[in-house]
Image (tube, rainbow, N blue to C red; front, side, top):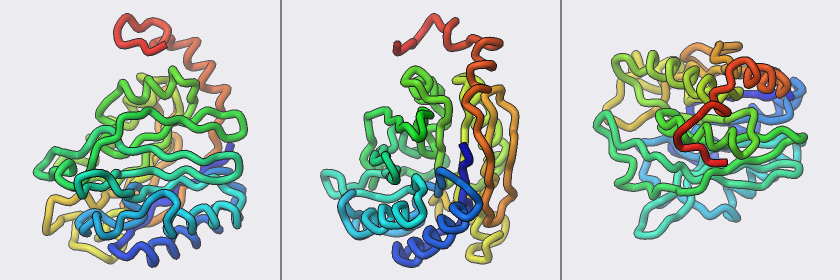
Length: 272
């Protein structure tokens, strides 16, 4: 199955961001992709007041994404914000397209490195997987990558691929952590991991140099990657905007799991 990871920089305007998604989705379809994955906060970047922008899953922004999926024949996965109780929002991944309609609310909120996502965002609680052409796919978001149990839960639910849209925070050592964590989650769940981040705003020409920010809001560092089930980086991007197209072979997961049966050998926290 061919997937496209669209590394871009979104701004505060959902309509402008939707135009970016539309252009990138049509490009992915032209390249033969079956699934196109956009970053966390594709609807509107962090650092923007989120509650006034949040829309339900049947609202106009999500409806436009569904229409885009219909136009292109792709399964589209994109980060948005939906209303939650007490004036908060949910950090939601919408997955929509032929035979697919699902959403995942980010479970692990980014209360780290001086930022408190939980001030404005309500945590999700449900593990979500989808199926595309018979291939099980798990959904996760950004800070979730620090919690291996979620990716093992994807594997336990039959997934051979996890999608990880992100808007990774910049700072000393953060790129190294991103690269280490994405490879580790692929390896310790022995599945493919497609990590697609917001591009570095500086490399996009829309932000201060070197990913510096005037607030601790995570605005992205780029370096999206496709990681194999053996933890090796198969394809990757740099800091700036770009599209990564790659083919995922589900049979490789079975081969790696035979050679490295860490899921079968677990003694703790096995969910099935």
